[in-house]
Amino acid sequence: MPGAHFDAPLVVENLDGWGPTDDTFQYKDMPYQPYSKSDQLGKVADWTGTVYGDKRFNARYRPQFGVGAGMYQYIHEEDENTFQLVDSTRLPKPAYQKRTRFQQNRFRQQQMQNGRFGSMQKSFAGTQKKSKTMKNLEMDQMRQMRKWQKQYGNRTDPRQHQQAKQREPSVRVREDWQVIEEIPFTSLAKFSLPTVGEPEELSVWGSLEYYDKRYDRIATKTEKKLTMVNRLIHKITTTKDPVIRQICKTRGNVFATDAIVSTLMCCTRSVYPWDIVVDKLGTRLFFDKREDSTIDMLTVNETANEPPPEDGTMDSAKNLGMEAVFINHNFAQQVLKMNEERYKFPNPNPFIQSDEENEAASVAYRYRAWDLGNNQVIVIRCEQDCVQTGPNGEIQFVNIKALNEWNPKVSGGLDWRTKLDMQRGAVLASELRNNGFKLAKWTTCAILAGSDQMKFGYVSRQNFKDASRHTILGMQNFKPQEFATQMALNIDNGWGIMRVLVDFFMNKPDGRYLITKDPMKIYSVPENSFDSEEDTSDDDNDRQQQDQQQK
Image 1 (cartoon, helix red, strand yellow):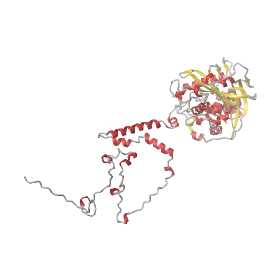
Image 2: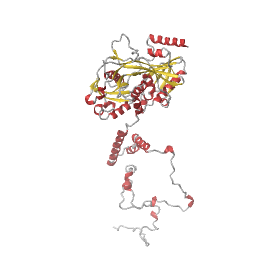
Image 3: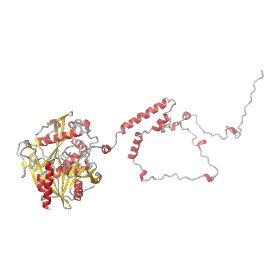
Image 4: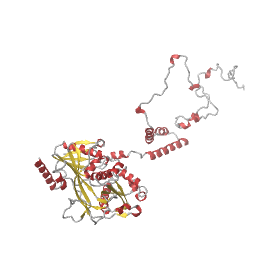
């Protein structure tokens, strides 16, 4: 058997040193990258480039030396015409492209919420089998994404929820009603009328009881049960007030009650819908309300981030409002020295009827006139609840209101029984945030009436599941002007709103108009709208006859 033939390979000897010689044409144009024995060859199996996409692992698989050499090195051509100078200086960004740290954080949160790792998840999706490293990395990313969504997902602006929520109007708009003006709240907030001076006292009616100062010493440990007081509180509209009917013959040309005026002055803080009727008769304006209007109703947590639901449960917005009316009606009378001598004014209560069996509540009606300028004088019927003796023996007139706690776990407020004695300022700040519109109306009414003091009572349920039994946990006193400053209530802005509305209606023909909220819309309605009784139309005819006689 012949022996195997062996061909010796060509061996090129480098006589000048070591390494390949110029005669090795086989590897002449092949790129060569220097490397170190300590380099990790992890990138060899990374076909997608996503497994090690994290910047923290960039340096792990980077060569230790030879960076920038070989195939990654810039090769300068001999032709100088191909060389171009590039300006690498950073150009300043325009103002609209600059981002603050807050904007960057917010943009980063939005990226997290919108699926920041969507592209990475798509790269993992496929028919190929995932390795253990890829599965662990995907699980970490999903866990981190859920953490970010839980931490930042609910942090949205509460006003967006309030604006987006559609509420039913306070009155059903009919087809024959015509919209004659629409005023956004942003424009109302810019009005101001600082030239309104002190009011003129036209007349005072009614009688007041003295305040029982023992209630100033009530605390959470010495709470007192709220009792029911069967007394009548009259809520007479503007056009049915007999005193206003007499005053309009000789004084003023704009007439309203403090509840209506305070609603218009503080309308920019309101959330729930409301409506006000305006009657124009010649040169006179009557700001009035419907019989089933919500002007005299109280709201609970109206301006809170999460207001009460509008269902039929015990803690719904409507039922909480009725509960607040019940509490204020009884609380304002319970804290007085009942069955004692009253502070009487020259004129008795004008609304007491001879056939009324129950005793009338302690209340005083002040009819005061303000000059709005441009020959416009507004007469407002204001109310006060009681009197008290001051430190120097002087008589002080007081308005009494009650704040009610219904369920701190649901409402998002503080627990009064544990926080009221030690952190009363924090409790009040929470009420200013949740009931800003209601407190602003109360403060405006006290300023219009010229009251010396405002007393707020903190009334809570004995059991949060029972809305019929309540206890008094404390009292707090304020001066109306100081409290208005504390809650950033601008009375000049309120007078500006009233002046704009008065000028608007004075330039309109005689008739009936309706002001609705959200946004403020003014409708021209038929004159017989909202008339449910025959005497209402008779009263309108009487006023028209009086106007014709005066003309």
